[in-house]
Image (cartoon, rainbow, N blue to C red):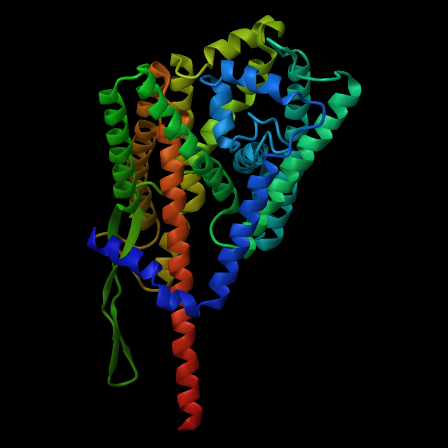
Length: 448
């Protein structure tokens, strides 16, 4: 814990930060992009009656729409141009990554390095447009069939409304996709994760106010509200502890004689393996896949086909099938994404090339098998941790109608993205300090 506090203090060293011009530019660029995103969530779709839409959403706030609205940063509730958020892009990324594992053509592209990665990214963008168009069309049809106490949500239903809705929402999703890529390339942190993070953070004050209002009106006891806040703090602490936990595999390098009198090597280091190598990705992927079929069904309501009503009801928030599928998806993506991030064969080969070995383990294939064995056990623990953090608070929320923002999934995303962003800021500060030292050394060399 002391080292974590020291790292955080180093990351927010304002003296070093003031001199890091490149880092400041990246942070300002990131903040500017996120402000543009938040402004876009308040730009409404043409042809929507906001008052009727607010009434309709208030009736379904505790269902799957509330969960989707949290990930969309409140854009769905206001039915803005960013109503689908960045979720179609995430769904497209999931599909392409799964296809890469089973398609020889895509697998070959992945091995081609930067060129192959650019092609896969282009395919992801195309698939994002297709998924966004499909979801936007279903959303438009569902909105036309939706009405509240004061009339229909759509002022003038028809083909013109459907086409303009599809074009506007697809354009908004593509813009968010581009914005996320720009943040990743020219800003700080992962753009996609930061967009979801900002949407959740923006809704936290209103969620806290709604929770306190429940206590004021007597709908929820003060003791339970205190318990909920303490539980949220405990979940945050647990997330920080596990996300920083590592299994350090000892790596030894043999001594080597260089020349006739100089001895090199012989030192011992370690290979850090995180308990949760996949990070927050499994929770985001699992949530986006669960929200994909249920959102349109929630809008069509009882006017949709019977099979869609059955699926929507079974996948309702807090239902046993919803929880079971959610846990299964989290476990699957934890193992799947870890296999993408860490390759035991490649790591073992790199250790062998540089003369490194794990004590008691033969270099090469045996080292790869050992690393795979350790990583599999760590991933199993990490998957259980993710499932517990995401699901257990959600059960309480479904039972007692607590705002989604206090759920495990939202807290996991907020804490993980915050830690990753702070780590990147710290890395930029350290790089800036090294650049300064190298510059000073060169100046001294020229003077000498």
